[in-house]
Length: 286
Image 1 (tube, one colour):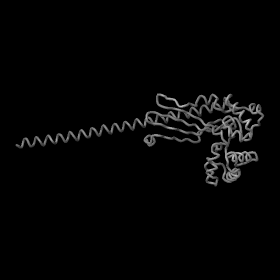
Image 2 (tube, one colour; image 1 turned 30 degrees about the vertical axis):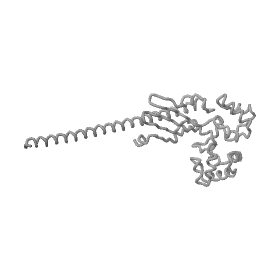
Image 3 (cartoon, one colour; image 1 turned 45 degrees about the vertical axis):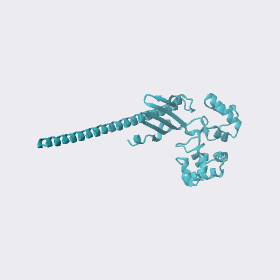
């Protein structure tokens, strides 16, 4: 083989090496671009679901504020404000979407035991018996709250000697409200209503009336011969809003605690707690 052929072979090899390197760089560049585009798409989906959730939350706040003007004397989920914002899961062009609202005043506010009265203490003891817990636990909780003040969450009482067993037993019927409030008779469950009334027949009649008419009233109580129980009413000012939204690969659940205030002529609706639950770990870190 002469020198020219040897040089030609070397040049060809060099050209092939350069082409291979260039091809590899091109593949790497395309792959990087695809990864970047994928990250951008996922970030865009996350932004969309966040905006949907925040918009839904704002709609709930606006509806609850209007209700303070339109119907401040009663609160229930058959009112226009609730029907306008509560949404069972539906499929939108962007993905799935739902808005659910829980009346936090459907339960007994444990902080009412901080300044306990004879009637409140008697009710709390009856509730303990009804959930198969020692009635003395009501007295212990009252003493704890008198010493430390109101708690933010029911579970906080475990730090002061209230057993997990007792807290789990009362949790379906007891909560710690972010603002002082009574039990709303329009949303209380039948079990707790019966503990309040101490009369199964009256409880059953009132539940039937509530189911047929959508809400209770003082007249409904009179019709069954019942007095309005202590620490009860027909309104609520504390709600949990649970919003689900999906878009592309992103899915988000946003939970907000909404509180209304209507004192001394000042009406306001505030978000006192908000948390996001992302189901896609990649979205959560973007």
